[in-house]
Amino acid sequence: MAVKILIKRKFKDGTLKDASAMLIRSRAIAIEQNGYIASESLVGYDDPNTILVLSMWQTKEDWDNYKKSPARKENERNYAKIMDGVTEYDVFKIGM
Image (cartoon, rainbow, N blue to C red):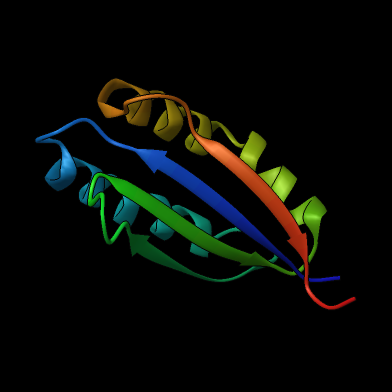
């Protein structure tokens, strides 16, 4: 069953250029993973330092495998350096 993953990050002031480059790199890695379907990035209307990534995967297991991958873990360590807080995740099934 396909799933959508909501990934919310709040970045420190002045780091959006770096955050954008990192998001592009993260998407390039995700595209190569089994089960990846698509993703989009949304910028907070009232708080442009808040970025929400909606990522779609064929199964939750595909997402879990990607989330555990060394490349993604490295990206998360890099994100942490420019974030204000921690990454928040929500997983949703598509359909009822």
